[in-house]
Length: 569
Image (cartoon, rainbow, N blue to C red; front, top):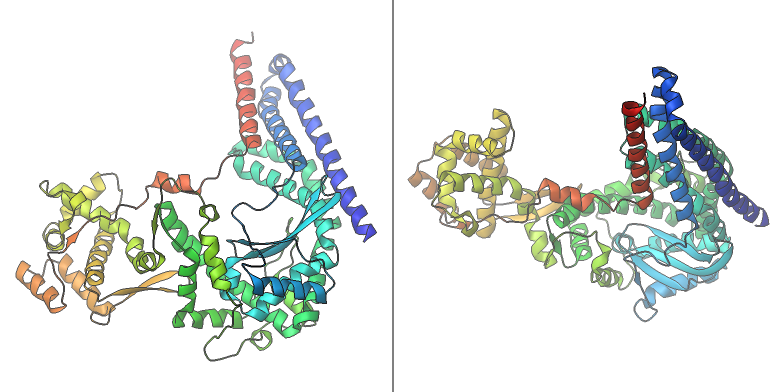
């Protein structure tokens, strides 16, 4: 334990010393070039060209390193933003599991248990004085894990995290996490945040070379120890739950991450970018997971092999495959070792009150990324309309194109479905041309595909209004419409007939009346389809001040170079 502490202290000291020397050297070089621009210009184009790119690169990287050095000195956030503290009265079953696991592996119980919105769990120690002094321990548990893991698998996850505290890994991590974070952020900002290219990027990579060498030494010194901590925490958890349950928990953890990632990136966040969010996204996720066809795919993923992702770079965690194979003594982590039945329905026994705790987190608006405008919708209604929202953009564009060809129609009030279908059948080319003229560049084939998708979305909306179609989410967040009265092939044939203009007004009305649909249903744009600008603003995070400073220094350096080139005799 004492050797780990010395390694942590040495790593922390070496980061500040090395990064400070590199930043000082780059600043000296940049300022030296700045003060001798005239001499560089007199030396000829080759020398001035080197200075032209090297000076801004050195100054920008120096500012970036200094900024991250300052950031690594600042106190870390006391708790994760958006996390929800759970008292013993609010979560008695969870706290009982935590206390029991801590007692069995001789770990210190955490002072707080907090719920987060990601599919992960971690135990941290809120240290002081750059991690040199201990502090309060906090256990973070992701709400998606409460929904998708059974009680034994959740106990394995909790025991693993408490195993870190039992072996005092949290103190070592507190010392080294600042270095890991600073290195990761510095390289990421230099690669993407500075938005450089060409020769400037090449010279910036040269300026980062000494720091890259330090990162490689850091990898060889610290990361093996931190990865060994993960294996040790797994062994501690095995003492409580056994090897089979621990391996099963690794499979369940992988499946939970995959399901939550698909749900958030393909359904929840696009809807959030559009300004519409469910009042309880976790209840909606739980409803999707509970669907039989979804559970079948979830069972297959839990039963299959874990993915092997080689952990290069600064990631301290070994892959799930490595962890499972280490627990099994080098055996394969295939279906025979997953601990999941090979056939039958996936049945889980979750922790008592787990889903109610997840719903409690949904009441905190900061658990989701910020949106420019937001309209909260009851989650069952939101879930039943996600199929419409996925095709809303195509249909809204069609309705606006119809309104432009029929000036008397007010698109905001909606138009009758019969009018839209008649336009599609009789004025198909005009609709495509008008849409292309309004800034939507597309080839004739793309225009035909858009019109087919929009017409399909219109008919599906009529089927939903008539109570004949419901939406379901399949594995991979694929939204599928279920309509017993009109199969997929019949729907495609109906859309083709409408597009080809083979249905007259009376024939079209008769066809839809047979399905029990009213063609006079007024269809209006959903109105919450985000523009490209809205999508970008919802996805962009606030630019760190050190990146802004590095960009400003780069601009000033180029301005000085340009001024020298035009004014030097």
